[in-house]
Image (tube, rainbow, N blue to C red; front, side, top):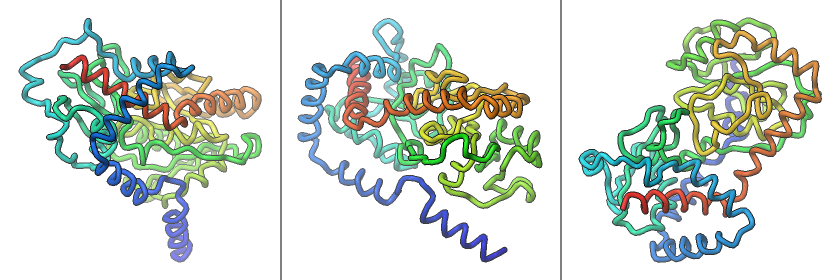
Length: 329
């Protein structure tokens, strides 16, 4: 048993399916040392050329989704802005380095005297001033939360899944931490021991719940993968939706660059009640209606595709910041 656990840990370490963090840091630190003159020239060139793209209208829609600010809804608390905002050139390294690296990749392409408020971490509240964040709550008063693609090395993973839905194990799988995460704790209290679920925690809450980490590829053997929110969004949702398995989850309460608020229930994912009480019922339905299940998978794949054009993603990121800086001059 001990040897098997060690083998599983070794396999996970070298075949987890996640992005390479060392390679990410190499690329980002190279970007961090590129001359700002080059980055500013590249920004101007990209944004000018973008106007001639066939998908420019779509690009602007994405920009306005992430940055909802406009002259009418911008009510700036100047005292708070003066207290919190800093010039880009004076931005200190964030405690979690990925937030600094992922934002400065684009911010350094602008005049360093532009000011912003950058907030790192899993954010589910709205600041009193326009703020650059990774995540925001889904409500109609979140315009001060301007989204950028942050912590992308962890969150933006897509897979190539060769197993058709109909050939997968007819169960739902979950692996993850649950401490301090109410919906995940509810799930374990409600379903642990149910044979329809392969579920283990990777933190120690109850000894009988604890299990070893498994790779993303191991998850793909199952028809259904739980996408339960943690500190903010469910970070596994992106790779689930790129696979031939189906994400099963309640309606999202927050969103990131992945635009979780734009997802349609039972079209991009299987939606269950907030109390999770209808999970088995929904699984039974889609297992017995494989054509409808495949339609969800196809729609999910189509949704994911929009994030794979690297140049377009760069243009959108630059335009989000361009809009932010112009409004806050």
